[in-house]
Image (cartoon, rainbow, N blue to C red; front, top):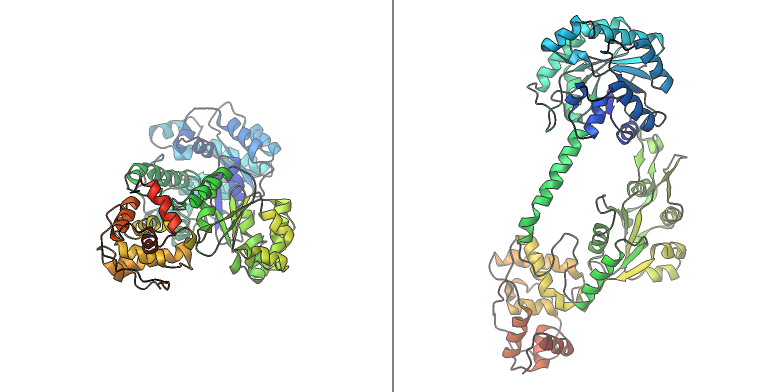
Length: 573
């Protein structure tokens, strides 16, 4: 095998999933080793040296079932030859017949030191047997990828025809592995000593030790003469450990989160508000969570369409997968097509292939944010995706299956765009399996006090206090920017109040609605924590001599709404 690349990458694979992912990422070598299989099952690589099961048969079994014929990169079989009854020539022939590109001496006796290592060598079951493995591979026209730990071992392997030498600098550190005392510098010096005299025609790689990231692997190649790195634990175990650690921390934080006092549920995807409209919308979204139909969310800017989409995804079967959001107004020209469909290597001058948003969303949910803004060309691409559940990258002839739940958001003008023929009617019918309209904030002003408290907690991590006069002005405001405008208004008011009660002067930047009748001055009565709607209304009634029309005007609600709230809180009489 020729190696024109400046950096070589080998991947130890123990499952078809890992092998296909590494192959797709451009691995130069795929090593089917029993250590990789043990890690998939949750064990340490050290277990690969124990007599748990027949190592060679196991490698053949999982590689034949999950890897052979499914990857384009050369696949090497990790073979143990320490069994004195094993015919090495027959083993190599079987490896070739199965379709492997080469052999690898793993589990290697070169990694066993001390009295046990000396005993294995004395019995002739160590390095000499592994040299025989390489010799038989050469005879069979196969390549050989060999692990070594000393310069003498490296030179012997080169002499008998090894095509790739990998310096093993110890097992990778981690929760299920062992710790290493090596730094990158000391590891580089050790690699240099082992590879001294190895000709340029032989690929030179390293594995293990302190290298746990691509950045550290690249640093090693710059410090010493090694050409590449073999990822084992860094490919499967360490990412899984890190992910589990983060997820576990998230779950263990639940008791603390549950102790936070809230007026309404405060998850990241909540649509806050106790009004009947918002209760019905939340119930509707939850009912749709497991329904396999596209959902169209319609509303003015800032009404919470994105949060509704997030809630719908988080409650559904693909919640564990990343939500993919396409910013439709930002899609423009060829770059927009690449963002949607991806591109093949070499397209538009690039050297690598790229997955588009439609492909990335496979098995998850894709949100087309403000879909009305799509141009005709991009509308056609999405229409094809909704019909065929397939994606064809730009510059590529391969069709890739991609099934995703579709959520679209739009301003109320979507139907006008359909009638004006600026939006395709057939695409509209594909995305509108179920429509939900989110009301503007001016149509649910009863939710404003609750929203203001919720936003205040997000801004300061504490529940703010509002005076009745401040709340009244907030209820009178039109909120053309809806909840998004309210968020920034509360943020600004909190900053102006400097941690004290938010008073009328802290929200005076809001434009008042012109009043048709004069309203008596409002006293700066403080609202406690949390705000009680009953007390808030009772105080306003008392101030206005229980005149309902005047009270409703002060509180910024209709007389009918006030009447219903008086009945709800038993404030009659």
